[in-house]
Image 1 (spheres, one colour):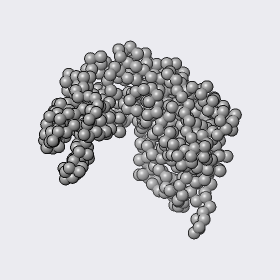
Image 2 (image 1 turned 90 degrees about the vertical axis):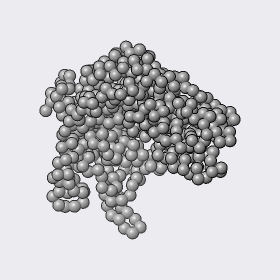
Image 3 (image 1 turned 120 degrees about the vertical axis):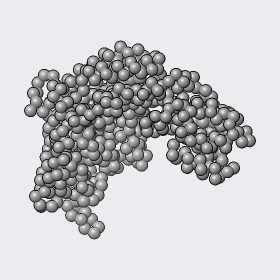
Image 4 (image 1 turned 60 degrees about the vertical axis):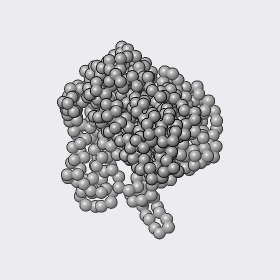
Length: 416
Length: 142
């Protein structure tokens, strides 16, 4: 058990991540700064998956043999851990999906199809990931509804006045916003957004893919109606998404996918659906990876989410201090550390982000370059692409120094 | 490795692209992009009998994709179509001096050739369907 106070013992944490020890081509040390895309996995997560396949691989919920009981217990234990981690009222409010994208699509297809009609409005924002834009475009197209955007200002903050104006229409049926921008790092004031929306009886979906992994999130305190996030961005395996829905809403939602596990009784022409949350989990789920996700939550709980956040604030502050000292750098997003997460997006001179990423790779530094699945935001920023470094619990200031060194090298190569 | 890629000549073509712009009386214009990177290239061709009389490109993207497009236009301007249509992946990589690119970046280098081939598919569609089909198949491998 790790200590729960004070700065993280990053040296000790790094020992738990086998991948950080590997060498890249040419014997280079890996500097992994692409955590907003996916994080690395601690040995405990890898072992949990291995243990399931080695010792109790079985399908869940149906069979009565011992393996099935063990697998079902382990699978449902993850649901309990997830519920506790985000402070949901009950496990009935936690639905497992493939990823956060599928979680949002589930809401669009199930809740959206039965609650959004012609000329209704769905309000989203310009900072959204494609996964919180395209499902609503599809729904709006199908129903003849309209999509409206809350704008973002030059510092990367949502224009809250504009948001108030959108809500004045009695046609708004849903607000769906990110909790943290995957490009700018901006932490969105979702509690205020939800309060304003609820005053008018409008439900809110929060895309928490970038926030739940990095800070304490309490769904009861926030009072969101729907929340989506992904296991793989918080030390867990790929292939596991989480949808939280308030029970009173989930109870009224029609099923999303019909099939096994989501039913109580099936007859020739009718079906009685299963209880919550199983009604929304048709087919054999990703059992091994859901079980692996338990170990990821335990790992984060052992550290404590407040300390995760503090560590990232320290790294981000250091990275921004250093990067602003590099000639030719344009930085995007808020400057105030309390308003942003551990994501640093930037451009340097006329170097295209893909060229920069290639040069970074020469130094073993893994960063992201491109539109980050946020082309609406790229258009708003009037850039084709940005480079992005993003941090997690195992990153160090020394790694940021390596990153800055590589940036200086890029500047030298391109003669900026 | 990046020292080998971002040589003076690549940076020069990136910053001072040759044959860049529109071609109002083009016989063929074609656009394609690389969804992975967001690199975009438009090629405009003016064909006189059997030679490329004029060629212009428009585009945005990384240094490799844009320099490669610029160098390709210089390579094919004034050349007979018959020699241009057989240009291979290796011809391009050798022309720009980048023979050791990884799989992700090789797409950047070859985007302009792909667009040029697709443009020739359009040109040959009615004139020479067999060549059009061969070029279409070639472009899929790029």
